Amino acid sequence: MNTKEENSASRLDPLKWAVAITLLVVAVVGNNYYADESLLYRVLALLVLGAVAVAVAMQTGPGAALWRLIKDSRTEIRKVVWPTRQETNQTTLIVVAVVLLMALVLWALDSLLGWLVSLIIG
Image (tube, rainbow, N blue to C red; front, side):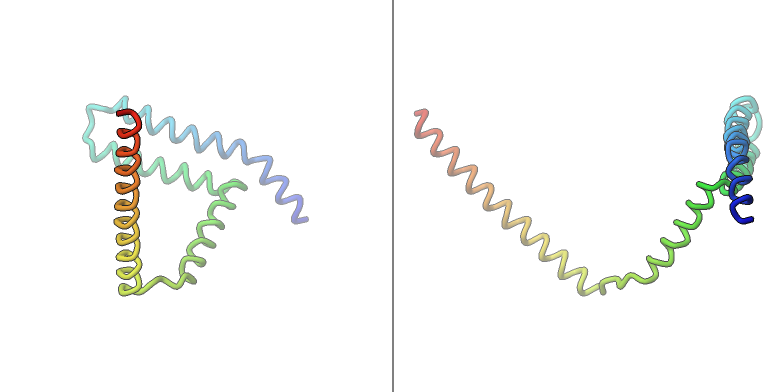
């Protein structure tokens, strides 16, 4: 029985995508057509039509999967152990020191090679 529900939903997915895309096209065309109207009204209309298009798209299989991914991502982000301010500062200082050291090493190597080439070429 669950398979029948999934199959019927997947058969309607192209129609739902067509409705969502149509809503977005109507929003863009309407925004251009009503260019003389107040910007506030046009922005509100764009936001409403965009929200309805997203709501329709979320009713499809890929839309539901995207929503699950977003919810799972939020859950995983809450599990992350973020570094303290002191750890962040120490790591930043180490990175800056290593970058400066490598810049000096590369400058010295470039100067040495340039000097050697000038000796060879004359």
